[in-house]
Every structure is written in C-alpha cells, then in structure tokens.
Image 1: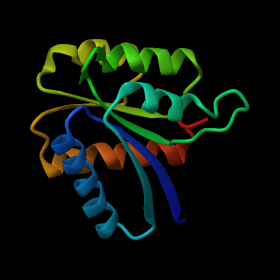
Image 2: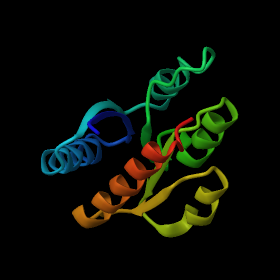
Image 3: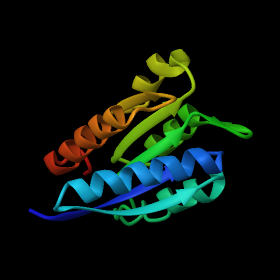
Length: 140
C-alpha cells in the first residue's frame, strides 16, 4: 500500500539538514510506495509551531520527526519532551554528535538515536523502523 510520509527535519546546521534530506530522498527513490513530503527547519520555534499546530483538533502534521539534539539555545531532548506533553504521538528520531543523550532519548519515547556522522545504512535502518511503526499505528 503506497503512503506518503510527512517528515520534519530540525537541524541547526544547513549542511546537516541538507545531508539528511538528500539521504531521505535517496531512500525514497529506492523504495517505491514510500513517498515523502519533507519540511526542513533550522530553528526550534517554527519547527515546534509546525509540529504542534494541528494537535488541538487531533490532526497531525507529521508522521516522523528527525531532531538534532544540539540546537542554538535549546536541547532536542527537551523539545521532544514538550512535543510529547502536547500530545505528539508520532515517531521521533534524535541525532547527536555523541552518545551522551542516548539514555535520556528513551525517556521521551525516541524510536531511534543516531550518532553523527550518520552512515547511509544507519539512516536507512532508522527510516525503515520508523515506517514500520507508522504503519503499525504508532502514529495515533
């Protein structure tokens, strides 16, 4: 069954954002039936607004979130915690330069934790796992 996955990327660096988007496009190209609409954000406030904007009426703007932990003036784990408190039930994948926040990532229900630099294989595994969870109804 073909499905379009709504994905939001949050990364404070343009290069990291571009790299993740390009790798997701490669994944999409190699997997017919896995359409992706990708929104990119370099700042936390517009990202949070886009993700939380439709939560009041039960609609969700995104299925899958890729969030960098190190953001200017913020922390991706804390942002993920706020999203969960506001009712976001989709898939969250966190990315960091080290494994420092890996345990904390599980406390906010992150499905996957990526350590930079992220290989194509690791990103593909994270996407595959996220897609399975979305199809299983993780995204309620």
